[in-house]
Image 1 (cartoon, rainbow, N blue to C red):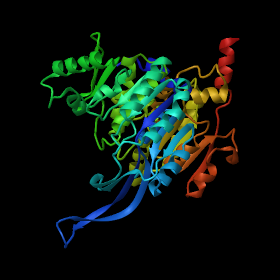
Image 2 (image 1 turned 90 degrees about the vertical axis):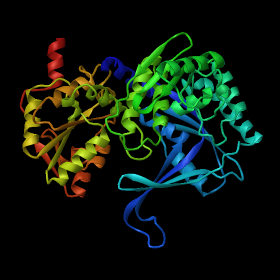
Image 3 (image 1 turned 180 degrees about the vertical axis):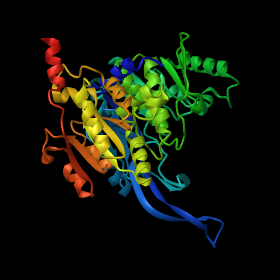
Image 4 (image 1 turned 135 degrees about the horizontal axis):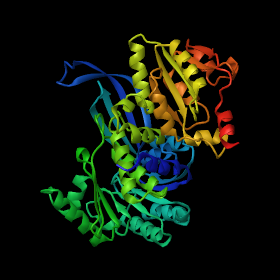
Length: 488
């Protein structure tokens, strides 16, 4: 894998990227519950529902991943004139940094997938959908809306779930216009006839989709797969074909002889729902942010490895990738520098064991004795200490363009090396309030240069029975003063 610093610089540029996603939107509905007995009426489990989640699925999940990575997005899709469409419109409207182009087609059934989950496993899925192609009038409306906007984007994703939005005519017109404006097009295909995507920058089929496109049942070996993918590049003018191969990783080829293989990174697989969405979103966004295609593939592979370790149609955040770039290498850091969902699971286990969880936050740009005293004091007031660390982008927002002195993962590694620190979680926001809402620590701690009312999240923590403590500071120590001495 490439140097983490190089990949992290690419991730840092995602905020300046806008990606247009066009495709089949659907409502992903997850109903969680328990199965404790078999029905006396038939040999089927009796499912007792306890909670429900609804989210954007299909091409909508591609958009969710783009936004969670920090990119801005535009979204063109078609919905019916039904209750599911109302829910989809509400979910799209609730997303920040998203420009929607939703078109309603009368008489169309909006796609909904309902999954029933018990004991961490899906036991049933129920689908409601229309698969027929959109009408000529709807297609004209889509092109009329988005063709003038193509040049305003740094990448385009065609997310084809085979529900009728990406007709051959729409694909051809969008790809032609994108090539005119030199905007790369990334395709997650469903059609057996991949000629409808001819001229796209990247075709990204999974192994089964590649076999279907090539008219074979399977590939005898890697050489056969590579040859088939290269032939698709030559036949249909794809610049690249990226084949996702599950536990065998990914293989990138072009027509000129390039072959890049990256091994899978997932240590555990809980749910592959939406993993392809995460891969295509990460690939397009990082390439648009300036990553050469092989590096974009590395990051997309890493993102896919993260998301399959999560239950449901999950997304990957930029900070998840940042942490994974480093923790992929060393077990010690893997145990301490945590993505948000892993931190939540870890804290849940700590609390289940009766341990008190403390929380403090900061930039920790240049570590000094004052920091060590504060963190040691914080650890003495709890059983486990989690440190929320401002990312580089967050530090710049707080302290200006010349800061931080040390990159975020360098700072994270220093913190993780301290015996008094049990976990480090990065956050992009100006304050750690969203992390506090998620993690709900027992003790929130800051230096005594704050009053309780100045501590972000104090009301939240006290509202659920936690406490806020102010820690004594070591006189004469300040990162700002250290920098002044260095530049004097």
